[in-house]
Image 1 (tube, rainbow, N blue to C red):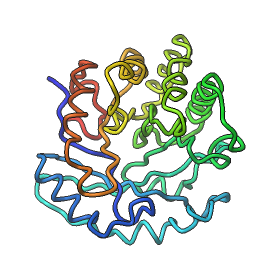
Image 2 (image 1 turned 120 degrees about the vertical axis):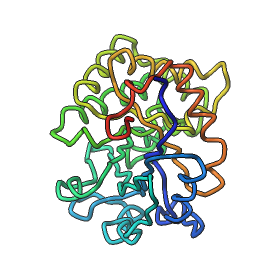
Image 3 (image 1 turned 45 degrees about the vertical axis):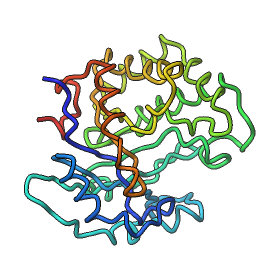
Image 4 (image 1 turned 45 degrees about the horizontal axis):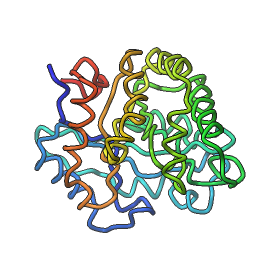
Length: 268
């Protein structure tokens, strides 16, 4: 059976400071699910657990008390409304969530590619070559997969985001192309063995046909390795829900995904 567009596990509410939109509230997210026939949605607001040292000023405000202000979530028959987060991974390979919160949350989105947070999540803020960015992409994924974590309820967010080099689209695409095929296949086999979800982020698919293959190469390798996928709109405002299904369909159709390729927590 073809991979069904019946979920969205990466949605920000107005509590994420990069949203700060009162219209992007849990009820609006539930309405999005109803309108699009989704069976599962998940709030994944930005989060730095106060039990973990190293939060920036921006992240320190987005602590447990802050994100749990969304609770209790509204409910509707036939829709599972999950409570999760998008945590962080800094330049020192710190995962910004502790064990207690890992156990409490339904789903945890981990962004290893927030390279745009220069000097905080990667290096010292200087411009980096495509080769250096490609090596960082691989190194961070290897270190993450070496940890003892509840991978069954974790997803790797936007592995191909343009945030890899937000200042140069050309260097961003070059960085994806610089990831050696053999190394890409190796690390995706590790991801498949761990059971971590691979996110198909709608924003990552918004590129020209000429550049799309550089993006899709990553996910082709993940599929070949046996990784499981989930969908994430990464929406921060209600208007961003419009059109995401077309980008999900593009990824699903191009990769030839079936329900067997879907992360178990959202599989039919």
